[in-house]
Image (cartoon, rainbow, N blue to C red; front, side, top):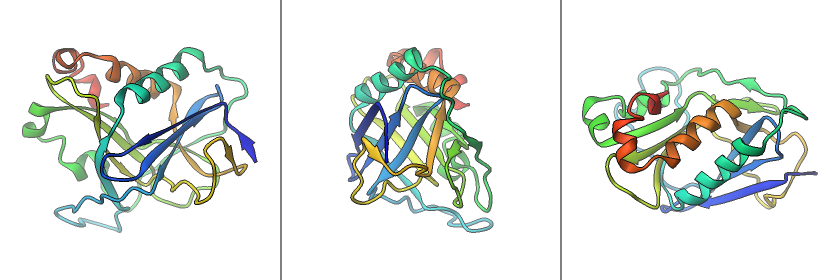
Length: 200
């Protein structure tokens, strides 16, 4: 078993949660835990076999924002966590699957896409992708999300003591800094100042 110094479990309004963890090293590990709302995609499949797509609202933006910012402010590169770049195979990228790159969506939502994410440990699934969205111009306590390809948190495991080598999706330090900026921005700033950078 390995002990992670910092763990955050953030509930999803539709049911389930995300588990974020780091040990002041080179990335934030991410798992999903019992997410229940799968998105019905149209068209369902253009090519290959798409990994299931989940969507909804993360209940507590403040907790997620503070966790990510704490990692950005205090993480070191030693010991470095070995990670591999994710490669999307047999599925369309998440932004295309959600339609958030359309003009009508960009008029109402600002988002930060982590696509594809890095991975840690043995990995045989689709490349993990996570997209966090905010309604333009509105201050809310929750944030929207779409997720695909994330590993499921093991049943019976506790967030602060995980099996060694457990596969995880990883948010790199650079991407965590972008995500922190996005979550800290006021609603008006998300619209006027982060419109382009929020789509990376």
